Amino acid sequence: MNTPGIAAKTLSAPNRTRAGSPTTPLPGQSDAGVLDARRTAWDRRPLTRDVYRRYFEDIRTELAPGRTHVEIGGGAGHLKASLPHVLVSDLVPTPYVDFAADAMHLPLPDRAADNLILVDVLHHLPRPIDFLREACRTLRTGGRVVMLEPYISPLSRVVFRAAHPEPVDLRADVFKKEGPVFDSSGPFSSNQAIPTLLFFKHADRLQSLIPELRVVTRKLDSVFVYPLSGGFSGPCLIPGFARAAAWRLEALARPLRRWLAFRMLVTLERTLIDTPTL
Image (cartoon, rainbow, N blue to C red):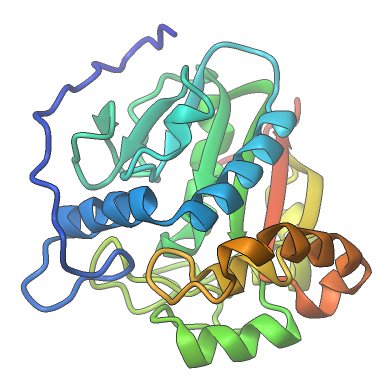
């Protein structure tokens, strides 16, 4: 894949950390150390890998045709095994990325990308509307933004608040004109409610504000297996012998996803409409 305007960056192999948080930095832990710990957790957690590989397959089916696929915020490099031709970027330079970049100021020419892919990234961006405008600039007509993000259902809201280090604030003003939409103190600051606010609660307002990005897909997912897998840092509560049954139960629970889901897959497509930058 050749993308004009980007110089791929090769970094030396990491010192694989065996301690530290894979979610948010502990005292004395660097941002790159979080991503290294996440990579170690990925290697050690087969059910987490299975969960995410299923997500990655869903992402693959949403991609627009083309050759220039850019992952934003892919610092631990998990997507590369499922999409070998993806160009991986992250705000934090690591040995797993092709180049370092700010999602709101991408080093891409206008209309250069076929797809922008984000896995658990949008809710970390202090100015999500600025990113969506940047996506409009960099995507060709018909190109897509494909995002896997937390979904705040009645069940997930309780679990995230009780057992996840990232905050959930459904009162946040995701459309504020100045300053960050949450208390931003680094690349792992977040508000897990941002995707739910943008694509569900305030979807009509978002569409009127950025009409050139048309919503193609809003798929809710993950009722049982994802939360019980422990993700990257929690205990896995599904023993190996029960995993096939857990996936069957997951399928049976699909009609209840509106109330129980933990995840969403959202796809936006770049249309011909161009609106002036405000």
